[in-house]
Amino acid sequence: MWQEAADFANRYNRTVVQAGLWLKPHNNSGGRVRAVQWRDKAQTQMGRRLLEAVLQYGDVSVGMKRQLIEIETERAIFNAKVAAATRQVDRLNRLLKDLDEIEAMV
Image (cartoon, rainbow, N blue to C red; front, side, top):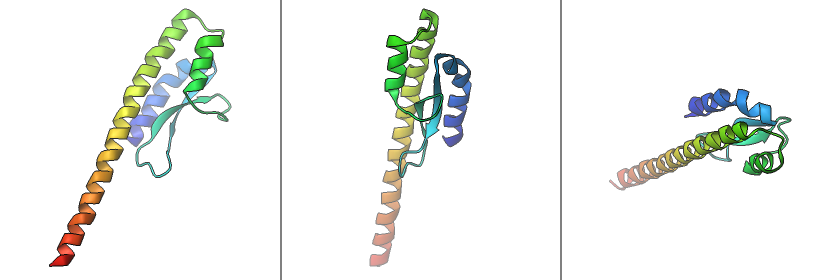
């Protein structure tokens, strides 16, 4: 999913940069898979509030606003998949640890 996050960001950055935004795969501390986050073009700020500000106050067309909403919907779905995959990996790692402990009992 690392590559999928990069591909997702690259696919939409040509569009979102027109609104002064950027999409970037972002590592959460300890995360195994990268979620895609909104960034400003200078890469100094992060978060959905940047998108919300553009939608509310930005000088962008209605068509661009629709595109941004569609991209945000896809981003939210992608990030939910990332969260689910990360949780599953954590569970599997706990299982492996438990199995090692059980094996050590013998």
